Length: 488
Image 1 (cartoon, rainbow, N blue to C red):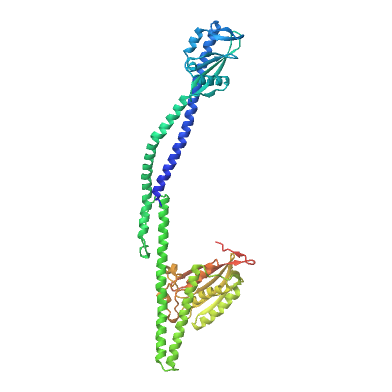
Image 2 (spheres, rainbow, N blue to C red):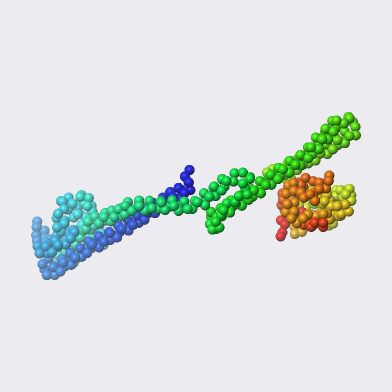
């Protein structure tokens, strides 16, 4: 396939050729029109001159004489007048109402066939419109007629002047010469110019191609293409490519981090499971040591199953293959059920769980996933709240939006860490290191996906040592399956 530079040059050359052809046609047409008007003016001038001579000589009774031939009376020019008219250029023919009175020297020089064709054409010429006659010799004659009133009362004299149209052919030839002589020169110069201009325009694109070819794997995504901030299309293309590479870099980094974290999270329970199974195999059958080892192995296998299930959920969500079974879900009974579970979890950790305002709100969504979302928020709050702390739950309807709020008095999250808490496997040791109650860092990521899948969002505010507040907002419905979007 031809390069862009070649296509630009070819397109420019074709456009130039088309422009030159169109211009030549217009020039040829205009040149023909002007030349024809000149010829017509020249013939008119000759006819007018002959008419004036005829009229002036006729006033002196020197122009014509009456002759009779074959019992028919007619007019005949005097030799003196013929001599005056013979001095006129081109073709001049004077007729009365029935016959030709005079034919100029140029007419008399024609062959009998051409002379006959010319005289036939003269009979069809009118004073109001010029006519063209083509002779056997391939010459074309433009004829102009002019009538002059007779001073002798014998009829009306008709003066016809004709000029060869070879000037028109000369005009066409001049146009052709200009086109074929200078056209190739202009075309070659234009092609060279277009090639040079195209080369200058393609240089930034070629540089982009080289830079992009250098980014061959995820380790080179930190590179960016240098862009001249000119504001043109190439500059905008470079900015778009740089933004795309930046997103790819972030995606590759997240993928590498995700792979490393997932491997780490699976490695630990697999190691523990292997050790427990080895202990169970070496311990006496039915002994307490064997039962403890098997119980620990069962717990680790359950932890791995939860981790794999969470990873599968996120993978399906990323691919858009996780369908929600939407229906009208009343949130009030769901929140109260979650609150009872929270009370039980709080008692085990000596944490006070209080339930604030719970308003009757209905949303369109998947009840199972909504329960998972709210339960994740509650268990997360209890997990990172110290003994003796408190967790408060509430459900409100604000501007057509259901707002589920979980507020705790836990150790909080640093402001620098807030933008990353929804990343997969994200963790900060001082927050996440809670012994056997530590998670794997996927709960908040799954919760955010569930909220987004329901057209909602999760917001968080927190300060170190003063607890955190998570708020889940989901559009409510005011009629059957008629969701009301959240307002600003």
